[in-house]
Image (cartoon, rainbow, N blue to C red; front, side, top):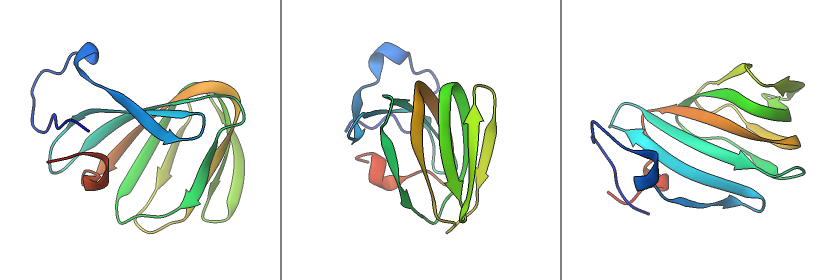
Length: 115
């Protein structure tokens, strides 16, 4: 993991991807103490396991389709949809059609970087 904390300009080619689970490639983009943007590329059938964390998270479906569970409620989401997961709410997904999810976290996820 490479830290890009507080970098004003961060070309995509200077970021690195890592496994976010089987069939999921995670790439930490720009971030500060208050906010982090993460790109997640999912292969069809990949599972974002149910979990929770002390961060507020907004997800934007850039492409593909997913079955998301948030707080016990399941919905199918597609390109252009956004989802809000508040602090401590359990959530996860199954990728139905290969795609990309952009996640914004507040505050940043320390467990995703090496500061």
